[in-house]
Image: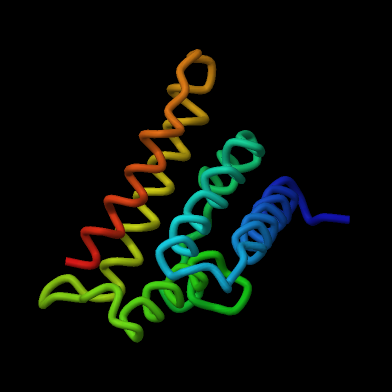
Length: 147
């Protein structure tokens, strides 16, 4: 039983975030860094496209979170942060003064979130395939992080 509508919505949002994290966690971690980074972004976008109503609910009902809460185990954002940190460790990506790892994680999240939101809202019923554009956006973002 739930203590009202907000509790039900909160439980649905939590379930959605757990499923999205599971989708991103299922990406093969033995891939090259570039392919892994690309595939976790694709997993995020794919989750949104396969679960558009749940995805919209997850972000429409999002509680006010701190960066610490977003970085807790079981968070999709933690996967992103760890991936960025690993890229820095292996020398694939380079933080710059004024644009560090947290900035890169935010940029990557904003990018996949923006692609996802456009795909499931504005382009939801438009017969156009933007897969190539989505893929090139992710690959170009990573190239920018490497410069």
